[in-house]
Length: 453
Image 1: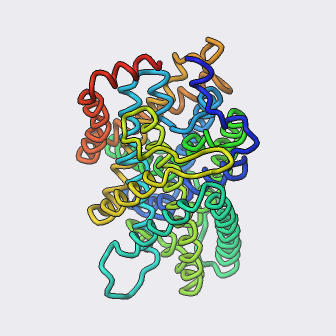
Image 2: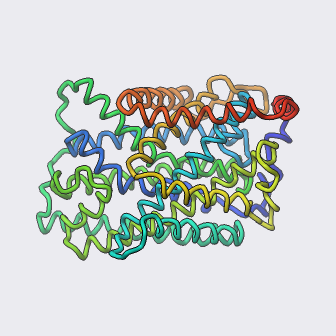
Image 3: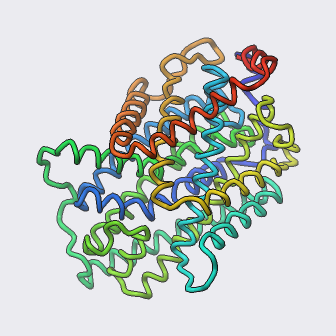
């Protein structure tokens, strides 16, 4: 692989539209979204213990931080936009990259956008005659308009909203802890660790399924790699953004979930799609629930915005390589900061279609399994891929992070597939779609892709 092909012209340019703050806020916006505000209700219903819910989130945190370190090592060598599509097509084989690219199109961004927007509608809880999915669709369209106006303006608006989101979350945590301590809204135990009795195989399956759901909440840890070609000094700032964003969000997740599952009676939140609002009502009454819904709506909008910003960059990279129509390409880069407009609106249309076809829980299982498998394959590149100098790409603390991420991700995905075979089949079909697209592509295009390796 040549240096020219590995690095985009903007990777070291001071004129690139995104800086470290924007890249880090993109990671945070991608992570803190629908998953953390819906997952724990379903997880609590399956595991039956608040302590096990928090343990599952802690295990997910270790896996996500390991993944951030691994993706940072890859991003240091491959500084173009494109994410898994770029990493796998350049370091393994074009067919692997195309499979990952189609996962991004069908699941990673389209499905995740629909999931966040649908959760937005759930938490808004409008008592109107509007048809289901209409509000969610409007949120997606609004985010698309925001990012059509330009990379830099869209990023700056998103930075401001992300800062506001963290401020509101901090206010929520402060009020919740004060209420729980002073009003005895919940009898919080002195320890959150559950009794370590020998779990059954059925419990192990449920725990693995919970981890797959939770992995969806952590999946945005890699968001900065999708826009690396537009990040200033990407070889330094992208790895930093991945790790900083993931650590910040991990701390936030653990605090939030302790409040969610210990702040209300189990029967009030177990199995509920709006677990955060239900916990808020138990802690501080109806007015506090309304405040929390506002906090969550800000967070969910930034998630939709982040996915609409990141996903089309993968489409644009695939168009650059000739596997998608040329109209999906960037119209300009560098100081002009013109986004891939056609790709943005294509993803908007795809997400709206998914909004009207799926439920929250279906999307949760499908997305968690599908994205886990693709991410594990990408991180496994560290075991054999070589960088610009011809040496193996390793990263910090090698080989511990890739072993934790690949092993943990594949193990839980396998157990989850046993427990929910239908969603696993859907994920495998999505992954296989890219292979079919590659095999059906003209031989001349395949030959060109292979000579680029």
